[in-house]
Image (cartoon, rainbow, N blue to C red):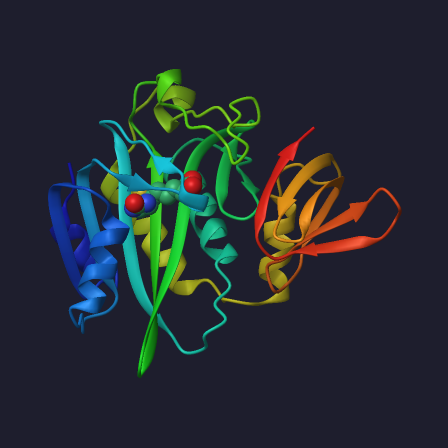
Length: 257
Ligand code: BTN
């Protein structure tokens, strides 16, 4: 399923921690860091993830054909902006598959025609000398097109109606994708993405899902509705409220209405 030798040869990965089956690659990554991991970047890769975690405490369900991994790398400043990782994943999928026009739903979902194809969970662990990023990425690649609805999760309000329906690359293209090639593309793009640059944010905003559309926002500063404008260079979502004022959202979720 994965050609580990090819991954070693074609990426800067220093260590591959491979498992046929594991609960969560992010949990494994955090454990490795806490045990004193000293080789970075490290890739934690599994063929079968049984207890995947998503954003805001959600579960991430994966079936055979999913690509699930965590990529650990060091950063020198503590305020890491995770949104360019989503751009790296979207661009990699477009390079490795026939899919085009993938969108980024702030902060970290990748959509194809309003269906979720990938989710990203970014966590950081700070050690005395260093902060390490654990970028957990799940992509529905060669899964059967229909993902059982009873396995869809409830959203923050305990409601299913706002949830994005999932899809897979195979479901959309009717062809299989090489998981190894896709993984290599993603890693190399993560390594080369400038982490905070105006040009990157033009690219991200070009792909922003629900741009100029009316959305409902659930955030630490409250729940409200407005027009989804753009992502700022520091990664906040800018919403134009009904009274014309603009709000910057640091963390939360949005839904099209
Ligand atoms: C989300 O959509 O809420 C984020 C989903 C992130 C899933 C990936 S799969 C690999 C890594 N390990 C985890 O437990 N979660 C992430």
